[in-house]
Length: 417
Image (tube, rainbow, N blue to C red):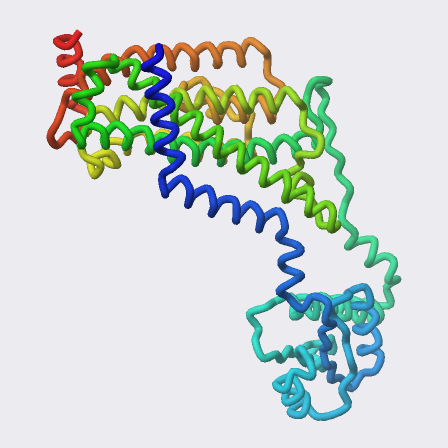
């Protein structure tokens, strides 16, 4: 057991000190800092405090008065009546005296029509505000011409109120679904990227030792099974360390954004009132999903002895991860679909899909227990099979990039055992 912990610690130390780990951690920390302070960063590097003036050319004074009143609530945009010619107004825009100029004329049917001029039209912020103001002007004009009460038009255009009420007492409310959907969304991405990143680490760790012939020394002192699980747990500690750093940085960033009055990411993702049981399920399914894929990655990594072959050997596992992720993303909108329900009992999809169902739906406890039992049983079975393959796979050298080598590895494990 002492040798087991020595190997686990060695795997952890080597990866923590690696350049890839340091670079990935630093880049992710920077990204988290940017996301948690995105509002203040945008305000720092933008001219949001400057009011954008839009010159309005029209022969109808009442039209201008309506347009000017329609943007009174917009702090970033102001209409200003321009008495000169259109060419002069264009020159003012080029000299940046105005953000843009809009010419409002009477169309063939008598309704207002506008032409918008600006140095660049890629930024649709101002033009869209102008479009909405002109749309309101047109509605106002047509209403007056048809002698229709403006209050009737306003009532017709008002959005309808539709309240969602679940008949089952145990069903989640619309607010609870929105809150859980944010956590499920984040969980899916965490699972997806962690399996790909740390699974690749495990497979390359084994391939690196084999390519340097270190494996020949290790198997003489430590059993291959101990080696496999030492690497799995060592990389798991690495992941916990990295995620712990990310969570700490994210927490600090969110607190800073609260202090300066910006909207919190917790509010954005709906994490302000999450059911504690959902968080527990997230941790359980995340850990079990990691163990399942990590065991598979170690098994596949033992079949190769060159780093360039490791990527090809990992392709089947990556396809499983991608398939589960895509199904889960589809299930965010229809979590009660029969296809999602059936797929959630497939062990390699269970960490994503069953957590999706637990978070979004009110499902019986026995279904959750059954899925957890299948998942734990699959991890144990894969660990037992993987240990046998690993025992023989670490003795295989040369080019190996086919799953047919599983049979060879099993034969070698019997001889070695």
